[in-house]
Image 1 (tube, rainbow, N blue to C red):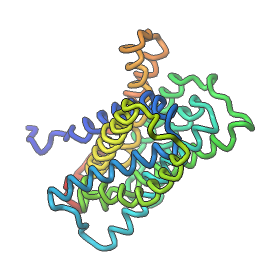
Image 2: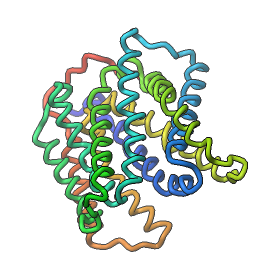
Image 3: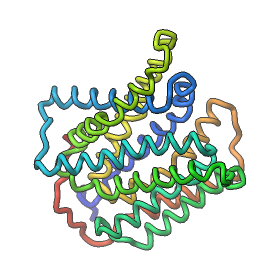
Image 4: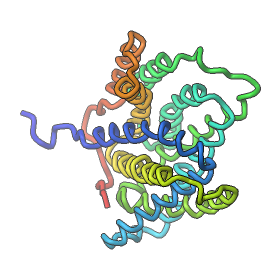
Length: 309
């Protein structure tokens, strides 16, 4: 007879679905803001506002300091790979290559995550995970259509930066589980963004110095706030919560849902039609996520109790 403890916890999977929905709204909103603000300044606002929000929440809850002094160093390093390098490399790469190239190269994130996780021993590489990644990646490639991509000497540097971006985020996802589980998602992400803000905010301030701020419409600032709260703080917190609950590769493979969510939003708001290509891609992606998220047989040995503070 199945008991409550035997039932799978679907909370982290619901969190990961929400993450992809929040991140999926970023390209449209971000494109509007980037028509007015320099890219690096948007990163500065995004990281700085998120750091302030998380600090205010944790200050109110009186849960600021970490469990171990060495965790400050660990989270500082994670902030480089998960936020600073990740966002600056992505923006730099996007400005030097095609959007279709960027979407296609993003399929390498779960691959990097699994390889890095297996190399450092943070998780076991099972055939179901490998099959799930292959199926989901195939679905994304079908949906994006590689024929729309254009890899040439003109995009080489941008493509390389996007690959480095994927590798950087793969390191973050594969190596962050222990410290996030020990300190909690909120506290860990607060410090990650504080450390990232120390780098990104000065760069953003320097970047925006050439812009006449008085001419920027209020709607742009509301969109910047949306990006910081809904498309940054929210998904990073939910992602950290999920990382503390499931294997890093499971967190990474959910990234493959973003193109599907983007397409569904286009169907709902732009009157685009669902075609056979989308149906095939959706079946492959959801099938891949199913295989990649199947729990291993036998008891799971968790040496750390998950925390959310």
